Structures are given as structure tokens and as C-alpha cells.
Length: 246
Image (cartoon, rainbow, N blue to C red; front, side, top):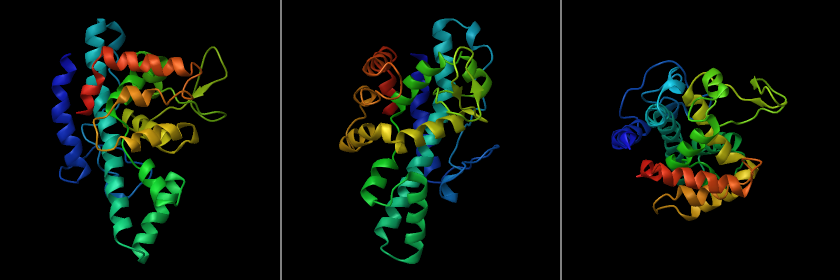
């Protein structure tokens, strides 16, 4: 597919940004995380193009992926930077500076256990994130995506956001696509419902990402349960989304 030609360049940019080797400008910052990891966003898209719904299916997919992929890469770049910060603190011993860094991670990621933190402070496979963004937003055409930059359909129970027209559900709204991708990554990395996702991801560390296998762990992401994982896997394979993890 045409969008695949941009993946190598985006991957290189993500890794450079995570290491602080390229300047990153534009409005918006991460709400939390180490200060030197909050500016790792690159090519940050603010919103999806308004004309998506009027495009042909193939063109819509291409535009959607080329718009959303940088937001996912940016969010993962921040997590990779945080992971490097965490690992440095764990290596440095029990000095005051390291304890302060680890206390910050414990607050943000919900654990003071170093092993648990290493399971949690890790990027989400890009192929999986692309598939969920496509499925949850209708390839960027849903009202939640258009009006609230909500790529992943995450609900804010009893809180602010966009109200569904046919139910009592409220979906989180975001200032930009990067904020949506960041919240999605933090949710998969911390919510108790996705513990199996984190354990399986940790078990496969060092091997090629298998977004389909990880999709099977997200049975609590949707009321469709196991069928949701199978649908995600079919979407990943049909669109070669695992190529985005190379």
C-alpha cells in the first residue's frame, strides 16, 4: 500500500526524537512524564483532514494512515524516552535523584515495583495501534474522531467529553491526535484490564512485534470480547499493518 513508503522515514524520526537529536516545535506538550521526554513529538498533526469521508476507500486509508501514524510514533517516542529514563534510574542505585525519578514513575504508572514498571513503560506495537485507530474511528470518519480527535473510542464514564447520540456513553475528546495516541498508550500500559497485553508484550521483547497475538489479549477493550481481537487481527493482516512495526 502507498502509505508503507513513509514508514521507514517516520521510524527513523521517532528514534531520533526519542533520543533528543532533532528539534520539535509546535503547540502542545505532554501532560506528564520527565521534562526531557515531553518534547519528543514530531510532525505532529492537529486533526484529521475534513475531506476524508469524501475520498475513495483506498485514498481514505492512505490519508488516514499517513495522518495518524506520526501521532502514534510520537506517543511511542515519548514512552521510549521514558523507558530510557527509567532504566537509567534503576541502574544508578539508591541515590536521592534516582529515588525521585522512580517515585514519579510509580505515581504515573501505578506501581513502585521495578519489574512491573518495565512491563508498563514500553511502546504499543504500531500495527496494533493503527488497527485500533482505524476500527474505533471508522478510518477517521466517526463524529468522535472528527469533533474530538478521538481515535481510539475510549470512554470517560461520568466525565467530560463527547456524548454518544444513541447511548449514555461519553467519549474522551482531545486537543489533537497526539494527545489521543498518548492517552491510548498510557491506558494499555496501566489499566488492570490490559495486564495480559503487557505480560505478553514483555514475553516477546526482542522478537518481531506480533500485533495479531497482542490483539487477542484485548478482550475487555470492547463488548465484542474475543471477536474484537479476531476482527483487529483481520484488519492488521488485510492492511499489512505489522509492516509499521519494522
